[in-house]
Every structure is written in C-alpha cells, then in structure tokens.
Length: 213
Image 1 (cartoon, one colour):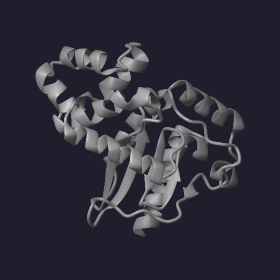
Image 2 (cartoon, one colour):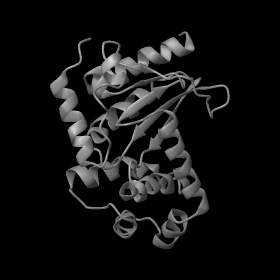
Image 3 (cartoon, helix red, strand yellow):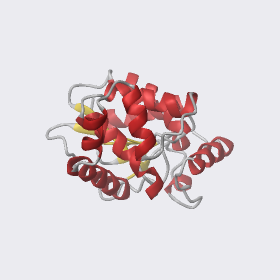
Image 4 (cartoon, helix red, strand yellow):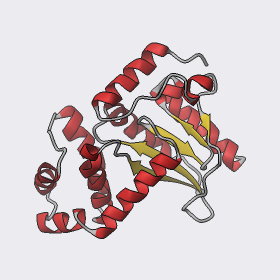
C-alpha cells in the first residue's frame, strides 16, 4: 500500500500540537511504509505469561488517539483468548505526565469506564484537564471520591506504572501516537497503515502472524 503523505503530515502535525514527537522522514516509517508496519529488533518479551500482547500506545491529548480508541476497543472484543490488549499512556514531555498518571489512577480505582470520557472531555467538550488540579476536579465531577483519587494519583504504584510506560515507549521506539505493537515484534499505526481502520486491519494481520491463527 502506498503511504499517503498528506495523511501522514496531517496525522503527525496534530500529534505535535498534542505534545508528541514527529517521526523523522528517514526513519523506518519511510523505509517500510509499503508494509504498513515496522519490525522491532530485537523482539520484546511479553509481560502477560503465555499470552500474546497488543500494546496500544496513546495520549489523551492526541486527537488521533481519540478517533482510534473506540475502534481499538471494538476490535479488542474480537481477539482470541490467548491475546491480551494493554493500554500504554505515553508522555513525550513532562507536561503530559499527569494525563499519563490519570489513566493508571483510573485503572487502580477500577474506573476505566471513565477512560473514553477523558477523550470526550478533552476533544469534544474542550475541557482543559491537563494538570493534577484540573484532572482531580474533573474526576470529582464524575462521582469519583476526591480524597481517594488524590491518594491514588500520587501513589508509588501509579508512578511506578508511569515509569514502566516510559520505558516501554523507549524500548518500542514510539515516536508518535497512536501506535499498536503486536507480540513484541511489530508496530503499526494510522500513519504507517494509511488510515485508522487500515491500522486495525493491519494489527489483526500481525496478530495472526504472531499467533499462527
């Protein structure tokens, strides 16, 4: 598939506004664009024993992540039992770290039902929930206990997971969001696959390659 340069410029340009880093034109993006994915070297081990991992690298501030997220969610429900989806919030700079911690706070509090509502708040309602104070106020409006939220948000456990996410982003050489890593071997994205639906289709192909199903 020929990569649509206009689509890529639009995608990555908006990611830059959201705090992401542009993929260099001479990177694996350009070298392997006809495949719709890049191959990791070396391959990475799975943290989910006995299962193939799909890692969704995203940022709440990224408008393209907001578009892809419901597609990923729907696709995840069709994955075989030996494949697990893990979301990895990305912080390309310090200004994105509180939103990164928001995801892990919701996860720790068993409130990931609010995950899509964060995207809605930022990209549809234009709410500026980018720092700890505004994020906490927003969570309280959603009926989350504020004291417990603050305690969890500032906990060692949440910070540890955020640090791990940063390590994964570096290991997988994630330079733009959204990106999907499959089986520790491959990475695809709307920019690489030339579209949102196309990136899901490519990820599905990669899952079949990894699992031989």
